[in-house]
Length: 179
Ligand SMILES: [Zn+2]
Image (cartoon, rainbow, N blue to C red):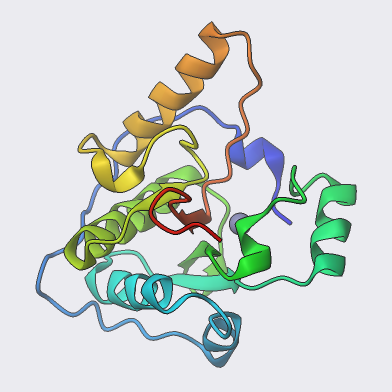
């Protein structure tokens, strides 16, 4: 569903902007984005909506609830690695940055989206996990998103394990929100 070469590009410079707390971004979700939020857990919908208000980076909801057939096709194509996806239960969303009206699979805008999502989730007290740092609860972290992701990748590599970076993916923590 997204190009691996973008997602596996190593982190570079920090984002130039960060969400301005308390100020409306002026961004609004398209009908397509709103449709993707249908069937998604209410706490996650609340976080995603608030994130767009806080975000200095426009983004779209490109996936939410998936059927078993959709998930099978994604695993077959290599876009997803698991049939135990949180998308099947409405506990996950994929958020893609929009730059000049186009969806972009590039890390810098993805990090800006992650920063806004983390801020919104913290405000709401919702524990979230991010697809670019699977082994930590994003809302428990304080470093810049690119550092959180780089630390995850370094831990995996030093353990001799594969690194799967899915920057657009956010899901409710399995500990706080068992399916
Ligand atoms: Zn996803």
